[in-house]
Length: 140
Image 1: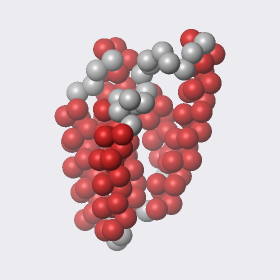
Image 2 (image 1 turned 180 degrees about the horizontal axis):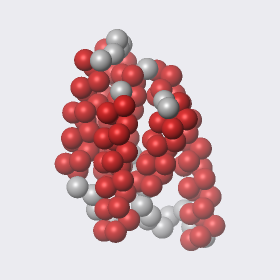
Image 3 (image 1 turned 135 degrees about the vertical axis):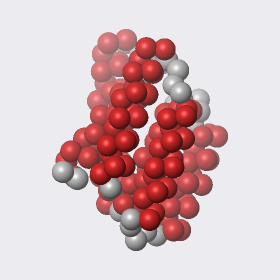
């Protein structure tokens, strides 16, 4: 399990840097993490139906949420969610709670700084903070 979080944090740091610097990310890192997340299946007793549902919902999210959030951000959230679901349902719930709190703080800061919610800004820092906080709070 630790390798999932270590690789995940490292990849999210790289993607956050790319997002802040160029507003574009290299999706190969996300595809690498899809493989790392799927490798967790060999370590855990998991509910295959729930994992399948998350994977299918991730594909629907890519189709319907692209106008609100970038494709790279959705890819990262996808591997994080099904990787955590493979570990346990509680791990996924903990991440979602932290993620929602971080998104609210991000939205308030964005509005305070730019006086608008519509200005495009980097979203990977929100994902990185949520994922790292989830690891530090619940898994160390």
